[in-house]
Length: 150
Image (cartoon, rainbow, N blue to C red):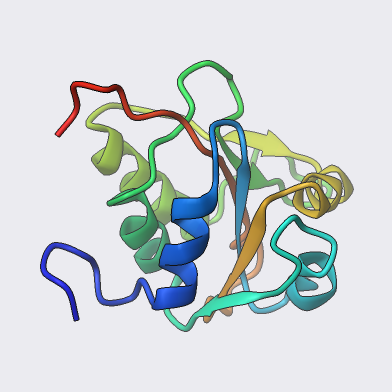
């Protein structure tokens, strides 16, 4: 245990978050996502796990991870097949955590299912959660921390 660090963030996840650079993508996926096979294609090359809900994992990650302010798609969600504008409860919960972490409204960009898979394959890493609800899959592009930040 470390002070000030969410206990859900295990050593493997902390190492990956620290190693990522500006513009790298992080995928946070539900239990149905093909996480292991996709993770093998990422820069890290192996799957990371945090066995908690998607919202809990996003809250923990965003307590340390800056979102990219230079792009429109720094926070993205997998859209529902055939219902791209529908936002299920799991995505609403994650949206609340994003807004809380950023201190303002930061809407997620919807990404079509197969386009999301392709984005995930190009990501730095994948964290599979214990989220069992469908469409609990998210992409977060890493931003920067200014030199004068504490």
